[in-house]
Amino acid sequence: MDTAKFIPQMEPWFGTEEKEAMIKYKEGGWLTEFNRTLEFEKRICDFTGSKHCIVVNNGTISLTLMALAAGIGYGDEVIVPNYTMIATPNSVKILGANPVFVDVEPETLCMDFDKMKSAVTEKTKAVILVNANGRYPKYKIDKLVDYCTVNGLILFEDSAQSLGSFYPNKVHQGTVGLAGSFSFSAPKIISTGQGGAIVTNDDDFNFKLRRLKDFGRSGGGNDTHDSIGYNFKFTEMQAVIGNEQMKKLEWRIERKKQMYMRYKMGLKGLDKVRMFDQDLDSTTPWFIDVLVEDRQGLHDFLKTNGIGTRFMYPPINSQEAYKLQGDYPISNYVGMNGLWLPSSSQLSDSEIDRICNLIRSFYVGH
Ligand SMILES: Cc1ncc(COP(=O)(O)O)c(C=O)c1O
Picture 1: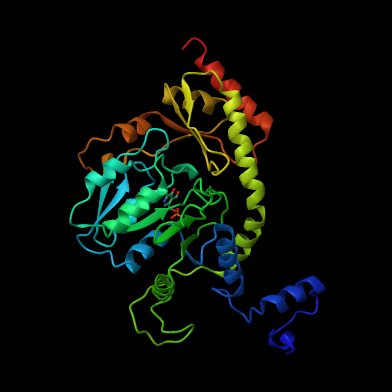
Picture 2: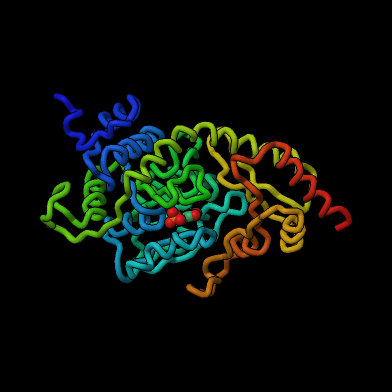
């Protein structure tokens, strides 16, 4: 078949490379999801080892879509960690469900298993594990999977910060529950500007997700709707960026690990700054997160030296939007002392050394 004839107007000034690309992708004028989107989804499947990948417009919608497809709705309880980005609880709140907050492990900032168990009631429908900064919980992940299976709870993973991070058994984060979610917003290890993805190994769930994100169409591109659906679609433009970003992923994973080691070396022996232990064999720190004394002072001092830092997420229960009572010592502590240090993979070693030296100089005489 002469595929070239399907390309409507091949501009005369295109070179061979452009022509070949157009033939390969056979875009036929599509800007919404098409071949490049499929390629991006396949790249994520190949990288994570997941059977299906469904890309959507951001990593909050991906969580909502998962919950919607699983039938979570009004009055259902969904257990989430009290330390996370607010998108995690909001993603189910929008469906009328009630997020129930539990505290996190001090070593990993992932959801505490015993506290999660204590929070289960007859209304609990799902549990969302957040892989904080690509870390996995201290307990074996199978323990959580088995608990959810035995108790009829849906397990989701919010792995927004975890592309490139695995559990110790080399299974990629986001792939052990019914579905997992990734984000491709600007500061993530790969970015499509905005963007998100759901991975799942469940064929039926994949089918439901694809229907829901495309207006509930009964088939690609038609106007027959046999179910309610929405528009949570990606675009070919984002996919073009995503495919190029995926080519850089291995390099970025390596660089993030080197940066973590560089910071660790530079901050060694400084008892006022505590880095989290990170299993670099399996996981990739997305950001350099630390617990520090006099966080405001350090932040201001670094700022006057031209270095930006950011306070880590406050405990969600204390946010005006939720305002829930509860005993959350670990997430409270992180909310008061947690700081993200500069973490772009573009930072050079000497820039990291300068940051570490400035941090040291701040604490001299403190
Ligand atoms: C844990 C977590 N969940 C969800 C999100 C939301 O992703 P997005 O910004 O793509 O909506 C983020 C974003 O940083 C996140 O860190």
